[in-house]
View 1 (cartoon, rainbow, N blue to C red):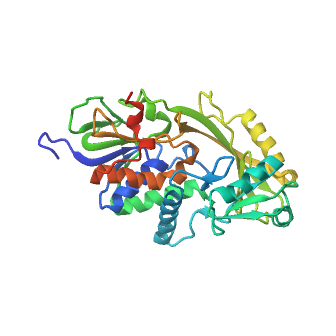
View 2 (cartoon, rainbow, N blue to C red; view 1 turned 120 degrees about the horizontal axis):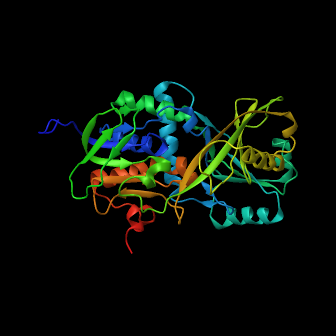
View 3 (cartoon, one colour; view 1 turned 30 degrees about the vertical axis):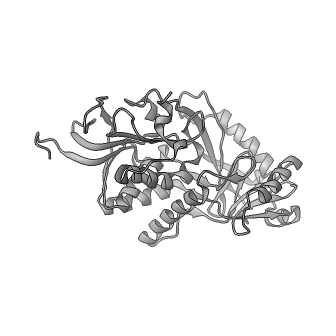
Length: 369
């Protein structure tokens, strides 16, 4: 309590998704246990079913931003949580296959192998014959890149495991909506919860995903919402591969006879209601990617949510230039899982050690002329 009888918390995080938990985890590693406020904690309707962790980015399969550090930080966290609970990691290993459906794509992939010095442990080129043998449901291809370091995470299982670990460490979760006033110059931030409780916090970090750009201090940021959808199917035949397949869409195996596939990009959607149109577009992509599997599939369910992106496609992270008690961790776009743990660590280094963040992710780049 402070001298006015109001509870005071060292760190508060608005948002308990991938970014919020990564920041809470990085603070917990330092022995600091934040309060995490999110009205949708544990609601499966708001959480991704699956997510890809792909170190080879874009059409040219080039190394991503801080690629090895991001990959290693996330995998260390995932495996550590599984060891803590004594379970298998909530991942689908086996790499990520990027089939070359055209000669142009084959040329780009082969160029990537030489240009970016991928090692044999990270990347492998598969001949058309090898692809046909190992992935019989694919169409005839020119070959394929197998990104060995890539994998997929069953996100709902991962976040549930993460929250359980954080609770055991001492993190305080509040399943409520939190608000605050825009009062630059204050040394603390007053947070109000929707059930009536108020408290002060020395540092408030906004990690609320889709609503980040609507909150005080951040409503001038160029955050753009992109709706994505995924569809789950059950196969009448066992699936012989574990590899995630990515090419104009993606397919993740879940169990021996289920897949989750997606995702479309809708830049003008008003809400996250799953749509028939998106399902049809996803099914069209699936038929191109795995034509031999489609006849055996039965629709199970569908999910939709928002990604948050920026004009330069890099996250917005760090403290507000006018009010250093207020911070943000948002705009992760479709690379949220891959970026989350490493950027969470970088943000903690700024908050606790005063280290500068990389310029390309600093939130203040959108405030300075």
